[in-house]
Length: 454
Ligand code: TRP
Image (cartoon, rainbow, N blue to C red):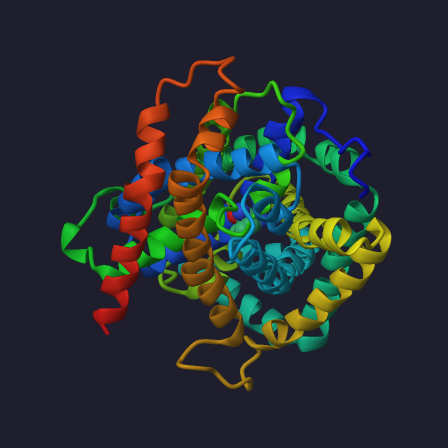
């Protein structure tokens, strides 16, 4: 984009909130949140996760918004404009993380598609006729069968990526905003319906206890590490996504307010999803540590045992697909914005080429749950991509972004968050100290403990 050209902007307040929320709320809130919470033992993890979100997460989001809006550039260009030196490397790391995350995100996004159709097929009928535990087993077998069918998994991944590419190729504001308006209300309604059914299942109490009664003896370095990674992943932080989106924010928006709203919305969706999933998991006898399949096993099982199950299930997976899509869009946008701004590629060219490359990088992830695929350090390739990006690259990016705002570009940051003194930001002092000291030290400490703890 040439410098004289007016940068695309969100159409007003709602536009930004919807777009940033659309990025944040995605598969991470339901699919990733529930399986990580299950693996990490439930309530104690949830508590750490909430603290990380509201102390570190919101602060880093404000930092990213400010950087992007001040610089009016993509993740890499923003650091070039504001400071230069080695700082653009932080943006570079982000672009690479974007490639890696979207590669496996496209696979999971793909998984949602057949579940939309399966909701109306024989899957539901068979499970609904079965005893509750048998239905849980059937749902597990069904998922296992699906992910080992490589051709299908790759075809759905391709379809998901194709839709993402088409939306991005059409441009930022228009394409994205239209998708989000009815998505969030829809998700809330359906999650509440699910929760009502879930907590009235026999045996669901154990699930509620698992999710809500913290057992502090379960706290260890891995729990903190996983909570940090999940917080960054779910809020789309640490890779310049919110820098890129920040560059489209109008100069009169209040960045801290927007960041807080996005975090509350995002956390609510994840919390409600857990409130539905864990009672179901325990009632149906599904192990909470089932891994990435947890959502895809537990929810269909429950839908099959409720009135109007096919309808609710179909609608749920459709909304999950849409939520995943708006997040995938934000991931591709980071990469595309970089190639447009810095290398001068046109939007369609950047979108098609990069989208295709990311699809190809995702193929090993698509194949990796299919049984015969080799594991690496005990992890499937998909898990490995997921965990290296979420647990290492994103918090590391967040660490540098905090340091940048807290120490290197502090005056500029102060001006940007207060709209050049035009608005009050009551927590300005606290925010600055989180960026300067609390966030970097906490992230470094959590990394240190995890690594030395080996
Ligand atoms: N936050 C999204 C989710 O929860 C995923 C996502 C979109 C993301 N953009 C990101 C994760 C940028 C990390 C960085 O599904």
